[in-house]
Amino acid sequence: MFPSAPVQDVALTRIETWPTAAPRGRPIYIDVTVENQGENAETFDVIVYADQFGTDVHFDIGDETVSLDIGESKLLEFVWDTTGVPYGTYLITAEAILPEDADPADNIKRTKVGGIYIPIRQPHVNILDLLAPIASAILFLVALGTAAVGFFKILMSPRLRRPWRLFSLWACYREQPPIHAKESKPKSIDRSKHPCLIE
Ligand SMILES: [Ca+2]
Image (cartoon, rainbow, N blue to C red; front, side, top):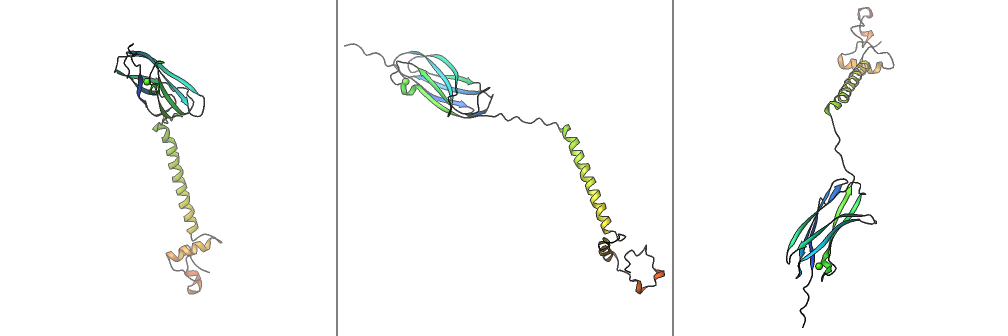
């Protein structure tokens, strides 16, 4: 009876990306753990690639040849440079290439990268650049307030002619009681002191 050949079986036991979503141009780090679960020391390739969901956009991220003794495991580190990568969600796949593998189902492991999105750049704000618009806004508000107070004073002035005089009379009643010409001697009335005089 011939002795049976040793079982060949390698496996990917873990795949993890960091970050799980990134602005385009930022590298995405991919950790893959491989393990030799067979009865033979193995040397094989591990490849990692990315596929965009819903399209045929494909990127080869990297490949590495790894040698493992029986029962040995190893952490492999890959980096995906996302410069120029189209925006979208991607599926990251790691695959151990061992055609003789007795259990090929565990030779592939996948994870989703939530998205490659438009980088958000923090606006560069120079406080000195803000001083001029802030000063202009303050001056504008002061001028507007001064004009409003002046206009209000004009409307409240008892010396206004018709038709605005009604407004001024209202102001006069608040300040002093009106003097009627019939109640006083016309010549004795100083109109400059009694602008609210009703004829
Ligand atoms: Ca396997």
